[in-house]
Amino acid sequence: MTRSSKAIGWFLVALILVGWTGGGLLGRTQGPALPATNVVLISWDGTQRAHLLELYDAGRLPNLAALADEGAFVPMRITDHSTDTKAGHSEMLTGYGPDVTGVTSNGRFRAIPAGLTLFERLKSEFGRRGISTAAITGKYANLAEILKNALPAIDKASIKQAEADEVGAQALQVLEAFRDRPFFAFFHFADPDHAGHGYGENSTQYSQAIEACDHWLGEIVAKLKALGLDGQTVVYVTTDHGFDEGARTHGRAAETWFVTSDRVTAEPEVKDADQKDIAPTILARMGVDVASLTPTLPGHPLDGTAAGPIVERDIVYATVDGHDLTLDLYRPAGSGAHPGIVFVHGGGWMSGDKAAFAEYAVFFAEQGYVGISVNYRLAPEHPFPAAVEDTKAAVRWLRANAAKYGVDPNRIGVMGGSAGGHLVAMLGVTDGSEGLEGTGGNPGTSSRVQAVVDYFGPSDLSLVGNEPDPAIVNFIGGTCAEKPELCREASPVTYVSPDDPPFLIVHGTADDRVPFQQSVVLRDALRRAGVEVTLLGLAGANHGWPIDSSYGQRALDAALDFLDRHLADRSSALLPEPSDEEGALVTLAV
Image (cartoon, rainbow, N blue to C red; front, top):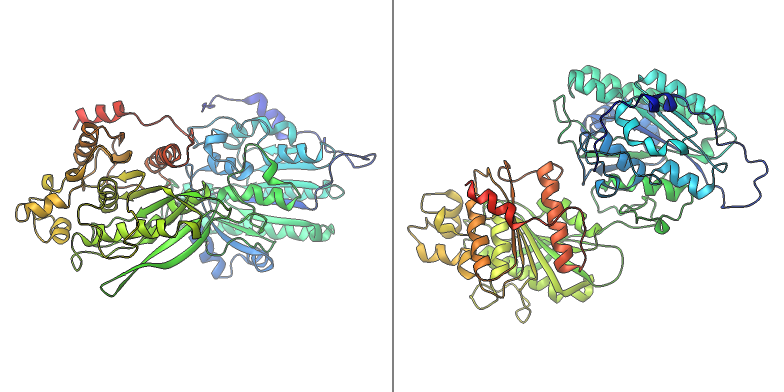
């Protein structure tokens, strides 16, 4: 990725007003079919979903409500980039994440590579005189820097600092000018983001900025009706990112939204669509065969033409001592034998729920994996080895039902965090001979796994459990000093052997709950046994991290690359393979 923070004055001159090149349709006698509809895409920069819904429910956004009543309100999430303007709009306007666009955040970016934006895609599909395009924005540098290569495909561009009234007035002029030709128009209102930074998410000014956006949405819709274009134009309204609750920042603001005048038929069981779904939705609505595009679009049209992950919730995978153990299953819509992943939540073996890994499961289903996120019996009511036995039963269930759910039974990995990291490590280092299989069903099926992703799980309880740690006391029924043999039996390092599957261990070096040294100990034991193992030490990270944070994205990219190599026979190439050298250097500092 390249940085582009230098002044680009020459570009501003070109962007402020680009002459019309769309032209009329006279004389067009051959070439691709014209688009089936016009599309207006409107971005309300930095509009938090929760705040939007508060105004919505209070009747203060009547035009957005009318649009949603006609079509749909779709909750949406950001899953693979920073929650800021450059990255959000890059994904919104291309359908690609930062691995393709090179735009990870406002500070780590390059101009979107030529040919990837909606403006360029549509020009390529329908010809320069077959469709007209516009981009009217309320921000300059953030958008000018990433849209530099798309400029030749934008017929009408005004990319500068502007308030809602100026952007709205120019939007109406664009509609008037485009009234006799197929068009795609992008209108960007920056006011909510500016108000949020200036006054905070809970401020009156922030609400007023969102209401100003709603006013101009009403004006745009009214203009389309006045021009007789409403019946052939679909309006989409969305945001590039949310805002941190009560703050003037948006570093953790992955919950976004998407409102359309179309009635979408996306898979209803998926709680949140992905921001990458916006571009393919627009392209498909305009008649483009999104399956034919290269690089392949990772998102899906929200119109039923390509289903997102299929989700089945609360499947009972075992009944033990009268307790139904349940899982949620996430799988790609396509057929075939996919690699599988068992996700195991944390919570000190005493709390937590399978929903904790929902975002990860959806993400990996979109990459072609079948995932199950599992509940298990919790301490202290059910101490060790109950949780180990249950997670082993979940692996056996997935393998026994592989044909039904499109899973390759020989390619099953596991992924868990904290106590879940401990449990997936136990799944990796045990083979059924240790007396830990339990009575959870499918006794003739193997619980062995082929790859392990361990996020900051404890590996040798004797090193941390001699003091009265509540989690360990509840898990094994006492301290390790009191129950040394049980402590040893509950520790993954006890079972390491040369036939263990490859491990990726990810751990924050500043973890104040599970010491980083716990992962060092496991790595060293695996290495001595000749097992392939990588320890990715995240310098400065504490115990856990949001999926959309820089730590979360680094860890997720490493996990995807690791599982792709060991289960899917491919490399995602999102980043270099984490190196033992990196882990070793961090170890020396501990």
